[in-house]
Length: 310
Image (cartoon, helix red, strand yellow):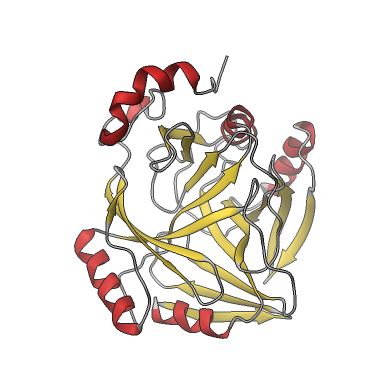
């Protein structure tokens, strides 16, 4: 069993409208945009990162907003719900805030004894807030949400699978343990993680497969401390029979990717070098940052990429 993985690093999803996406995460949810860059493979499309003040691993929600992209179809083989952690007693505040903002799908629920508030994202994304006991992570406090209610980072993600057996075995190999179960959901958690420590595995036999589009999670990333730890994880996965990409430099972390037995795309990302490698912490996410291979496109991109704010 691996011990290098320390919880979630980031979750990357697809969106339609970049401006709407930016407003939802920075204004409605009160997160900080910590990086404004572009898709490595489609540089005419933004890659936007939202997180706490520093872009701490375990707090980072990222988006590829593709103009005119079709809606995703939710189903199995995907991350179904992305869950954020808020302080105990905060759900009343959030229920009113989301209603005032016109957010759809708002409903309360309880899972494994946790109070949760479910809601939809602008593209039909599935989100929830959970009152997490003892979460000491510091929130971003300049996003219009009071400190006592603000999002601390991720709590968990929920994966929808037709058959969860092999994926649960993979997660155990990655250092997760089964800690609870209810109906068709198995909760798995990692000890001594970064606070974003939980994976819920939901089994829905016979359900249709998901179809990637706006509102879909593209991949979920797990955190390791550095490149040396990442290489250890890569070797262990390859030795176990997984087809893992070479290490890819993503400017703010190094990444490897592999497809899980249930169809979900996993990434293992390093905590280094971080989002302050090319911007001062006080100004994260303000300027358009481009990968070196796309630097020559700056005049075109600055003219043609949509404005995120007035």
